[in-house]
Length: 451
Image (cartoon, rainbow, N blue to C red; front, side, top):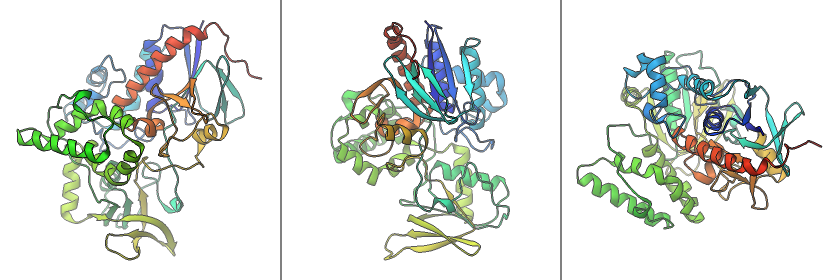
């Protein structure tokens, strides 16, 4: 019997999921990718066409398949050999091309359907899932996967520009303010510079920290037995700091330790007490991110140069709100030591804070519909929907679904590390294996018949 799987979201997470389903399945399945834009493998990160927007991980880590780590490198050598001469950090814009190639390679003829619609609801039935589309129609499926990414809106954002979709300022002398100092800020600054921007650029964040730069290193070999799982955040941070200090003293690099931790981060997060997770988000997440998510050397050199010239300034402060006075925008920012916020004047304000902001019950799109219907609930920290250890969606009663799963950024709150390709492809493998095993029992029943 052929099983039908619907994937809501056709970005990188959805495309990697589909490719793994076809590669790991027995051929008795068909997949519908529901993506409003109709474009596959892009989403926010990979829709860029700017060659200065580079992956912040080496090409050898970008295979869509856990079992074939050189899959992307082999494709790159054939289709874009010129990029391999510039080192292991390649432009992100080519990744959707690679993912489309991976789907062509794995999907049998007639088994993949791209549906240019938005998914607005899912309902689990006895033998399947009813997937509701924006036009009011429904799709019956045996399994469904949420791959929509995750974003939140905050008050005042109507005055903030989206760095991925809004045009660059026509006035190249415009004063630009950027909220956030992470990798999205780096991409935005490089876009401005590539466009010939001459005006002052100010970037503000609570810690005022820039991402560290990549360098040659060798990941430290760690096992879960080496890590104090379940310990408090204070103890865990002290253990990690001591490990870095000892390793550097013996001639190693701090990057060795950070990348040695990578395979264990989800396990550490799941075993971290809730109170410690909350403290981590308040006090340590920024420090973790700047060391964990690093700049490629080529980007770091350009950012260093524009900092040295004074065109770019990094300011420590907390963004509160934005307002418009005449033709100018003002961002209200509370800086350390100030009794009240001060206004930062700008012609354009870009919101580059990324996805790790707390959500609320008024979620947009599919995520909000799932929570409203009771098919899902927010995890304890409110970072996203809750999933069990097998990526199964957890409903309002705390019960994991047998037929609805999540992959990628939408699972952020449950797994923390779920936004990079190595994490997403491992989730895809696990879900594909789970569906294959569940499919055998589901085959005894027919596909969901809609009422």
